[in-house]
Every structure is written in C-alpha cells, then in structure tokens.
Amino acid sequence: MLQKYVEFDSDGVSTTWGETWKRIAANELDGATLVNGKNPPDLLNENPKVKDDLDIMLACCRAELQRADIGEGMPAPFYFKRAAILFAKQKLFVKEIQICQLYMDSLKDYKKRRGESLAGWTLPDDFICVFRRRKLN
Picture 1: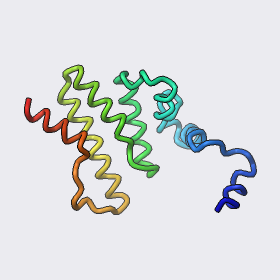
Picture 2: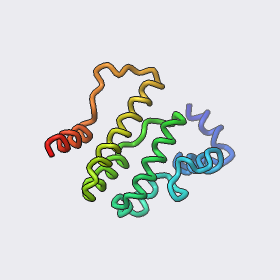
Picture 3: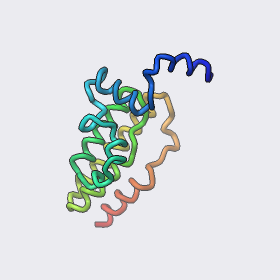
C-alpha cells in the first residue's frame, strides 16, 4: 500500500488531505463545501472565535450538508450544535429545534443512501436534550 501511495504522490501534487479537498471543492464543486474559501475546520483552527458567529456557523452547516450530499461523509455535528446554541442564546427556540431537526434528517438521509438500516437508531444525546428542554418550556 505504501508503494502505491508513493507512486500516487510522485508528482508532488498532494499535500494534506485538507488542502487536496480544498482544491477539489474550489475547482470541481464551485466552492460548494467551502466557507469563505476555506474548509469549515480550517476556519475554526485559524480563529476559534468564529464559533460564536451564527452566520458563519450556518454557512458551515450548509457546507456540511453539501459535502454529505455528494457522498463525502456524514455532516459534522459540531456546526449544527453551535448554531443551535447560538439560536437559543437569541431566544429563537423554533430555529434551535429546526437546525437540530435538519441535522437529524441529514443523518437519516446519509444512512439511507448508504443502505444502512435505521432500525434501532436513536437521536444523538445532544439533540435529545434540545427537544426535551423545549418540551419543558
């Protein structure tokens, strides 16, 4: 396997997967999975304070949904959780629930497209807490 990788990398084009994905996203996907020209994790690594910016977190949610739609993997929950927290801080409780529902729907869709059964599947704990908290209010 290592030999195959060495052959693949012989032209020196590949760097890190993040850089490779950024090039693919920018050139092949018209930047659909990028936020401000960057991969969502890169935004957080460069400036951890962006986690408190609702617009950026929503843009990251969109990018994650796009990434999942093209089959790159399931959407990362972090951005949806942060958006839910920021909606709750603004007392936009309906939006808080809607962003959690959007994440759960995307997970279900991802599993269905992969042919995985949803039998026995439960909500992630973080999202269950949101629904319970809102039911109590």
